[in-house]
Length: 336
Image (cartoon, rainbow, N blue to C red; front, top):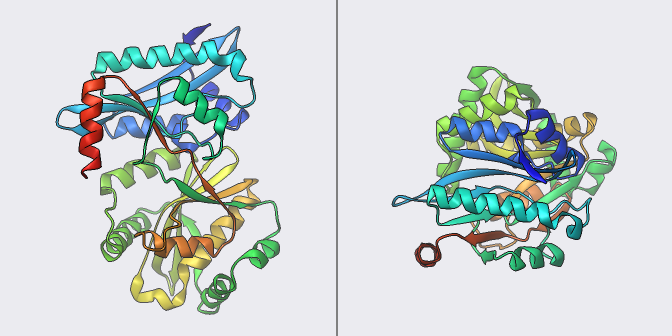
């Protein structure tokens, strides 16, 4: 049993074959993080030519000269193999992470597995390995997953009445929804994003973040820009990621002055139908929040209108590396 150096093909194939295929663990996501200036490690444990477990690990700054190691939607446990049979490989990977963490002088190692909150096996494993829960998270704690196996007509039938109506309204107004890789359309997406974040009161990423992400992921065929137009004017845009069996709606924005045209509804349905035609099994609407008073309440209602199954994840788990600094970090994070 040993640590090996992966190739892009072996890395992504392991994720997809073992149904661990989250785009946040993809080879391209690691390239994106490097382009942002973040240090990364691609850790793989192999035994007799078979990969036991692997993780993309990213070093992120906490400010004040402190950092963490983070594996977004990483999963040490491969559900296609018994935990007993793979524990030695997992232990070797964690040992390497602790070694890196000590060398990099980080506070803790963070992971947020794509496991549901009621997955007791996963919860017990991480607890027994020294991980503790952090109520704050980077990735959404709740999401909405749409099964793409039904026909488009069946998908429409399971949507809320108002959502179906709004899709038809957009069609009546002549809204079109198409993919684009034209620089002008991406500039329009950025413009709409700035306006939307200001209107809804949440902070958007930097322009460099969006541009770098699209350049890296679109080149790797992992991301598309979808644009809704009215009379040749772009009035809504979304970014959709594709990896494994899942298409994921990751970012979106619209022109509020054109709200009555209902372009975002048609835009989502176009992306859903396209993902289905391409053979994806699921459409992940990404973050929602069931709290009606949460800042996400508005777009949670919007996403719920399309149907699907809501899932609550196990949340953020952290392995303290520097116990004293970790206690201080948790104390400070509770105050903000």
